[in-house]
Amino acid sequence: MPKNVTEAGSQDKRLGSIQEDMLTYLLSGSFLNALLIVGDKSRDIGFIRTLNRTNFGSVNIFLAQPDGGGGPIVHVGPLHWYWGSLAAGGGPLPSDEKDRLVNEFNWVGF
View (cartoon, helix red, strand yellow):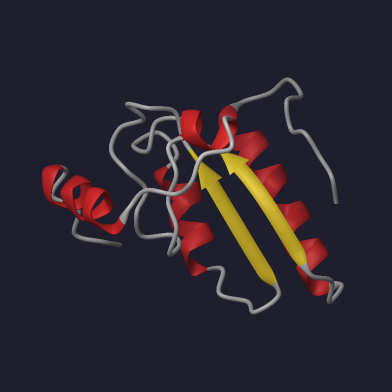
């Protein structure tokens, strides 16, 4: 399912296209690794909530966001990277840094 969703259209239309493609792929019974780069968490929160509910054993969703992307997206998975670190081949955030960010942004979950 390699796809780069950059076609013209509204943000909602592009996110809907990604969700539809992922659901179709999952219903085929195939294993899925997906790297999604999201922007501002507040702008993409509905999409992120949908991903958070995607709890299939055959799915690995990797989210990356730019530094300063509206607060960390720490509830979606067990490992978290800053986009700059991920792009450079760096490792995930240490758990103490993740905890600090959660406290700093008063994250309470979804």
